[in-house]
Amino acid sequence: MSAITLGEEPLAAPAYLPLRKVAAVGVGNALAFYDFLTFSFFAIQIGRTFFPGGDASHSLLYSLATFGVGFATRPIGGLVIGVFADRAGRKPAMIISFTLMGLGILGVALTPSYAQIGIAAPVLLVSFRLLQGFALGGEVGPSTAFLVEAAPPERRGLYLALQYATQDFAVMVAGVVGFTLSAMLTPSDLEGWGWRLAFLIGAAIVPFGLMMRRTLPETHTAKAATSPATPHRRASVKIIILGLGMLGAGTIANYVLDYMTTYAQDSLRLAANLAFGATIVLGLVSVICDVICGLLTDRVGRKPVMLIAVAATAVLAVPAFLLMVNFPNAWTVYAATAVLSALLAFMTGPSLISLTEALPRGVRSGALGTIYAVAIAGFGGSTQFIIKTLTDATHSPLAPAWYMAGAAVIGAVAMAFMPETAPVKTGVTADV
Image 1 (cartoon, helix red, strand yellow):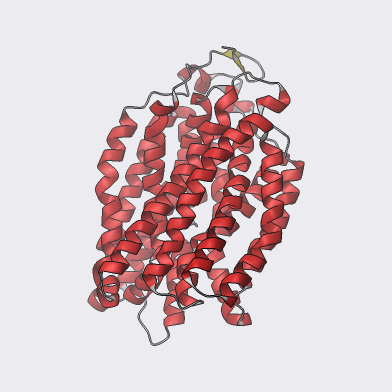
Image 2 (cartoon, helix red, strand yellow):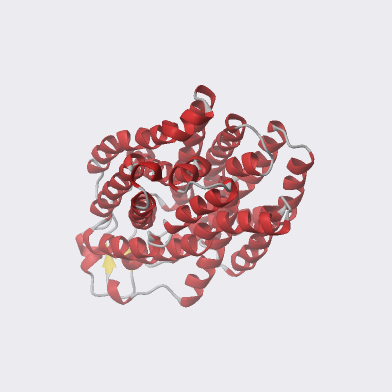
């Protein structure tokens, strides 16, 4: 095993970990994203609970705006917890972020409705969303850094595929929970208390996730953290800008697809249980494609995979939505969701892998967490609100598709200028 060189002093590389031993990172990551994204899937019901009024469209917009508020604190969490991980280690940072996420999800689930406590209800709701955003912003940097440092160089694509695969698994589980609740409960029960049950399911699993994370080894050694060379190595401006472009495009596409459950109900007028089926398709297809993508990028490189996928997304986004609009039934929604989900997996996975590999080890967690969180906050938090607003303003249900296609074009430019980082292409097999 070769040494890690960060400019001045060689650092002894940690022992690689078998894939099964890093599963605790994936489980914790999945739970964190389940908690955060469940809010989006129950946006209609939450809007009516905390923002009552005569106009259902306005209550949904307020709910989506509250969902977006959770992104405001993600860059802060990415910086604070990410830098902490570079100094104190990946493991304690991941435990802190996961604990805060658990507190946030429990708070959302237990906050009384507007009818019970008035204006205090939406105030508390926003406060807990801010806490969730801070925690999730601090989750990505340390967990992704842990995965790349635990992986053999020739398998980093597969290991880092866990980051998106577990996120998408959380989407699938959230879809299954939403589908089950909407099928078993009446609309009034789903609005009254059913959506809270979905959040409590996530909160109940938090203690198990914490126990699993406590068993993890540390990949960021004290020598690496305190090396005199490490603090002076910074990510280049080029890598930061390209990273923002790639992750921003992927984020917009991702949150357009996460909006599919709401879109199917609000724009296509499908029943709630059928709409949640789209979320199940999204999660299932994405998990499978994430793993395939990780294996593929280890064999052919990061750039070819993501460039083909982003180009196909730009071309197929509008036709996919046009199909759903002209034939508004469950099967067309599921088919369109499956195709776009597969393309998204092959677009976003290599983006995150190449960015992580391009960042210096000593600042990797803080830099990655901040870049990721800024991209998410700038584009993810606003996406669903923007596409709903555009849909209402233009009276066109194709507004989400055009927004997604435009983002893909911008992402393609950033990916084209991103350097190839895969060992199979560069020939560099040293640890990162």
